[in-house]
Image 1 (tube, rainbow, N blue to C red):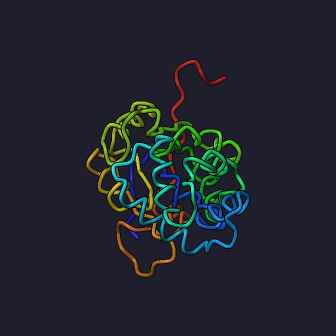
Image 2 (image 1 turned 45 degrees about the vertical axis):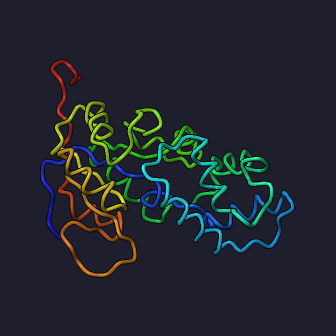
Length: 237
């Protein structure tokens, strides 16, 4: 594995990188629908329909109305009236709760080590207003000095603007920042177009590729130990 040098900060995508829906998107959808009288819906079918609906809505601005459209398309023909006129508000709130998500097993060990090495850590995520409270509830927020959310910036990945916002907050030049995520276009190509270094996280895949890592634990070998942050004159007692 190649070793990166001069990296002073690591930024992360969130969904699919740090956390995933638990047990799945379809399970959560079916759970909420059942409370509104629509019992027995297949979780696997709902997950498949969600992915198809999600794929038809790009670029996606993460507004509440856009989420309602995706949910309506997922349940189209399965419930009546559509969720946007019934249980969508409860479903939207359900995904703000920590038990609707699972933190991947490699996340906390990797963040602990990176934070203790002197690196700055950040998040660059296409998400909405639920992200910051969710990170707090999942006990992830304390690791990150910078959190940049598309909903707040007004631009999402792959726009370079969201990466530029993160660089300004980190006060670092692009080559000093490594971005890690699970999407080849949004997290790798877009980050590199903005001047950052990037690696694709592909859990469960086989083979060694220079621009892939198979676990966040791989960052330990990929990054050389960070130098201690320089102190400013007069800051040493």
